[in-house]
Length: 593
Image 1 (cartoon, rainbow, N blue to C red):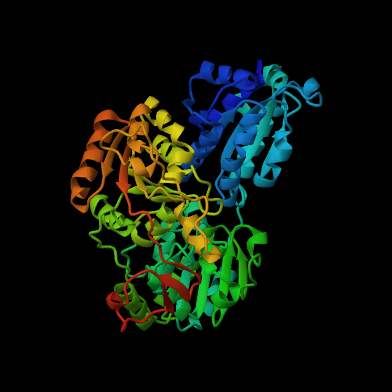
Image 2: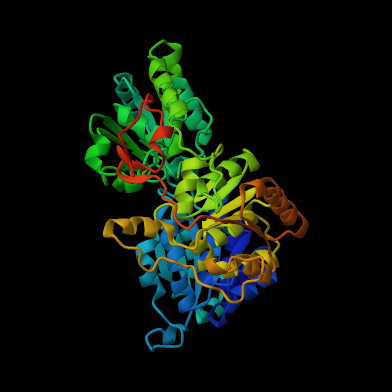
């Protein structure tokens, strides 16, 4: 037993729980915590330029590596409120991050003290637990509870708020007697697994929908093995992309209104039975429930009991960690296959493969200014199978999901439900901090890029290199496209005559992103023509390697390009020429604009 400040005990607990990297911004009310962190020297700290940026860096850090928990630190008041978007994003996608805030002294909490706000109440709806710790000895215990909650059941974020006098108070604490709490996760029973496989055996055209819970459970190998044993095609959700390689014979495409392939939607519409594992039936995946569920039965497997039946009632619901469920299903399926009890769906698999072969979207355009589809075609050529993509929202993300290829779990790091603009850049920095040797490519439209552009300086200062593909049409492209339903194009145009643009710039496109990136200590390359692609990608790689800073690779797009999407999974508007469609290909109902 040793006598120490409460914050010194907190740092010891963080070490014991495996935390070795933090993202944050110091301030008066959190300086005691920083002093403890500095004294120990065990936790790397990356100084953000905005506390929201720090929270997204923590998200990227968690999402990048199985078992990681990102730590975000800020002072009192606005630092905590700045974190709310990151907490919401993490909560929505079941991502554990720990946010620690400073707070006014306990005696001043009800006195409207400077930067004193009830951040625990504000954060409560978007966290698994948010607490202002009022007793010094409860500080290490609060951190212990935080890690238990973040890792148990459905993962999610926690906020711990520390009044400055609580931080400074001395307590007796013995770190040698400290142990992380055992994690609670439900597991599928054998009888439940047998029930699922009996239902599967009665199906003619089954599919597996693989959600992000499989990646959270680090169970992607089990998913692929199970799919291969039973011979059933897989539809990954956007958050589950990478659970099965894109070129695997059983990869049947993604389904949805936006981030989907034509063959993915067509395969879903042709199915009669679906096993959903670790997914939440998000509306961008399903469209209307009546259309999505018509003519098919469903099994839903999820770690959170209240997720079962939240969107629609499945024919069978099982509460289980995705990894435990896949292990149980795989054990039974392996036994049944050896005993000849599994049927074959080889004809159905061939049918899905045929759609995958024929239902392609056009990408090869020679236009100047550039069409975005061509950018993704070239990215597939330029970047290898191990590339990790980071992105959040907008036409850039939607088109990226339609045209890029992902072959491994955690190689598509995407903010799914919340979709905050500005997320991509700081999240990519968090991914780089977690995976120093990975090939990391961020993908943004110009507005997403501008939202938190100041975080480029973090990448330069802390030597966090990656390539940031910036597709620039000087528009809020997704909102512009959706405004067509209101017959307007209103307040979505980002272009202006920038009087300061250098001679090699694009005056009418507004912000000179190359100049901004270079002013932040980074490097940038601008591309205007298709023949510039190969050299530009190689130059970006060389600049990142040589200077160890983020490299912005900006592509000047045509101002208006509509990306395929629709109101239902059988009503996707395909923006292409009728003559280029293969009218003999099996397809869902496709409307032409």
